Length: 243
Image (cartoon, rainbow, N blue to C red):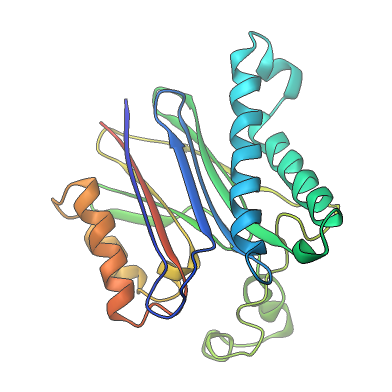
């Protein structure tokens, strides 16, 4: 059985929150998004993309042959979310250019979880003293900078470091990164926006996840850690544990 807890905060600088998360423990679906766009378009994109993905996967899994029909309902749901965000933006000039990152976890079995993502919201795996990143950032720094021979130090301060190479709603074509993870009892999966991983060191995140705190306490601690470091962006964490 999976337990879960989520928390979101505007951070220390912004007044609005463009992050969005949703989880359904009984059906094993967990989603987090970080929106972007002018006015309130980012908030709209993150909610729209998340709910379209959730409803698609839920509908596919409610059908006896859902998996066989779609092959991969989670990845197909990403495509559906991308289409909906793009089509919605076309109908309203105020929503033009809106987009969102999207990362989701879906249970495939009692101890097996699929993680799919677009953008730079991340998934980490922790348990029994281990800590590792599952997802891959779709950013200029991760995908372009290294091919140009730039060092890790140069990439940390590069003016393109916040630029995404892929996001929901930004192009017709979509690259979805997917990993399958096998969990042991006590293992945790953390989904988070860059308001956390871009502000709090991974070593501190690992220490918190491998502590004896409850899931709720860990989420509150991580949010506060980001705020203590200035929290220039919205901060969202969604923590899942096999119990």
